[in-house]
Image (cartoon, rainbow, N blue to C red):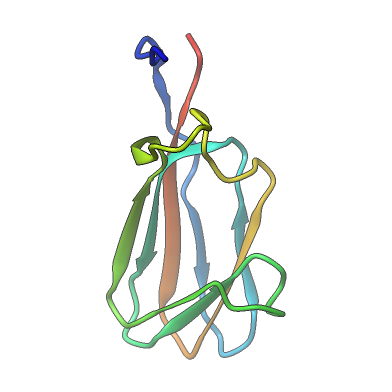
Length: 107
């Protein structure tokens, strides 16, 4: 299978929210990410959810960042990604949490 390397990167606005001790909306993906960065910029742990806090996907310790490169998969799906429209929520005592990502424009 050949891989299309002719696509260009798009840079959507950063998703960010200040943590308040309850579940807050960080933001919604406007495109399907190719690479995505989760960044806990605060001094307290932050739990992340995609269903409003019913299930915690991951808890980020203070100051931790995580980069997911969706291109690195070796499965059968060449377009492994998160769904456009996915909304992220965070719960932490204080600080700011941000999500930045790149998407393929197809041009």
